[in-house]
Image (cartoon, rainbow, N blue to C red):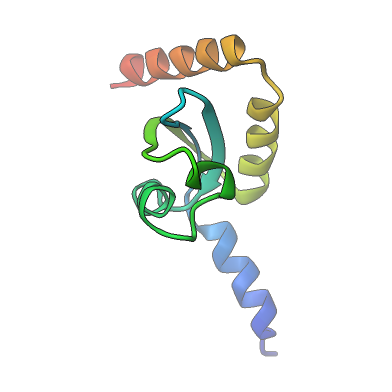
Amino acid sequence: MQKKEGAKKLDSAEDKKWFVYVVRCSDDTLYTGITTDPARRLKEHNNSKKGAKYTRSRRPVVLVCSCVVKSRSAALKLESKVKSLRRDEKIAYILKEASNDVERN
């Protein structure tokens, strides 16, 4: 039995590594998003119309942190959680993630 083409796309999307990332904009605001390729996404935010509307008027943006999650669904949930935090809570979360990365290496 053959898989439908739409099913292939869904399977491949779940097989990829997903990242939740935070960038600092030129006006010192923080923007949170998800991607499968943080380097590409950062270039899009800074150099193309594919960047988020929010960041287009706040260039350049700088990657503050990114973390790998197991699936797109998990990325969307974490993105929502981070976006709901106040700025000081986001910064504390980012610092905590950064210290976890240092401990793991």
